[in-house]
Amino acid sequence: MTKPVINVTPLIDVLLVLLIIFMVVTPMKPAAFKAKIPKMPAKNDIVSVHPDTLVVIVSEDRSLGINHEKSVGTVDDPQKTIRRLAEIFSMRRQSYIAAAMDEANAPQTVFIKAPRGLNYGSVAKVVDAVKASGADPISLQIDGL
Image (cartoon, rainbow, N blue to C red; front, side, top):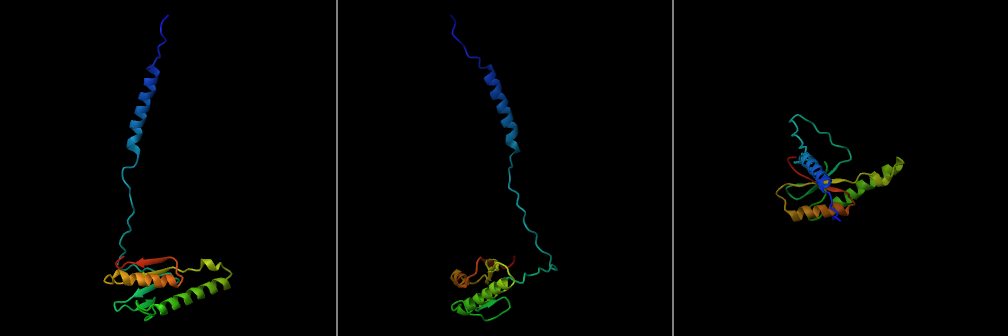
């Protein structure tokens, strides 16, 4: 009697077909990540500011302002800023309640704009003060963007 022998020819054919398929598919995967970079606005473009936007501005003399209000505290004593922001958030919640809208959706976003020369510790103090007023989220505004 003869020994049984496995015929491997069909197995090799299947493996070769799979190899060809993988060789064809491999170059099709993306080779680079393409990001859309925003273009620089033209000099005459006017950007409209949303009326609910709050910007805490740190001046060169370390005084704080909210939007167009000047002298609303200082970096070292931000209590007036905290009280004013809490007051603004309270008014917004009341207006949302009066309009029969969910007061949890009242905008409490605050941007902090500080000069480049200000040290990190001073900016951190302002961020802590804004956070203490109930702002969420807090963002940093960068000059020149």
